[in-house]
Image (tube, rainbow, N blue to C red; front, side, top):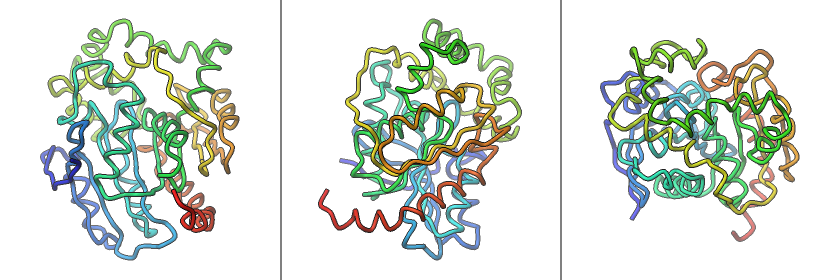
Length: 327
């Protein structure tokens, strides 16, 4: 049975969930914020949850899903901005990142499991329908979740990550997009070697990956947590599991969807980003940020929050009408 408990995991880390929740709780426009552990059949997921002092009934709840190699704490600035406007927030450390959800088998890191985690974790946290915001692997989960569970979403907001079919097509036809995926092929071929390389010399190579767009103290927190026994090996299994064998059932996305992408994104080309529109049949907005990198939660939180809030408010009437229909 799914359940939630308060948690102080990583309490000594200035960017662990307990520390993030503590800072959010001190903000004058926040009524309550707490770190928590959500127990599901997939494991125990650490995260944080906060609600505003003056909720805006048009806004509801935002669920924030991080990518690789990040944690729920990457959303702290975005969460604060959403809370200030009256929106509740919930963020969790995904499978492999949460110490209580680190299965050993690569097969347990397929997209089917990641989507199921989002479904079960949000239900355990008491969230029925919500606004989804996902970055990097969290963005990939968001595309799949919106296609397969539209009844759970009010809006879908993807950050950085191109639609999976658009991306796969570009990899096949665009040499630039193919080359940008060299790191993924390296992980699939030599996961243990990549893990050692990234963490060597106090995570020097991992920090280089952030290219200065993740503040040094946050990057140090990521390195520390990914250096825990088994952590880096677990999160690299996302890439090992993405070997083309899995075929999730999906349909064109009908949920109102926004897509924020940085023009200097190291992983996804403009071609992949622009082609993503072809797989959304519902309302859609593409928000390119000129000069922005892949690491948008840490470097462009204001742009993410503004886009989410504008999109949610624009479709608040649609959501009210949808609420009158049976699921």
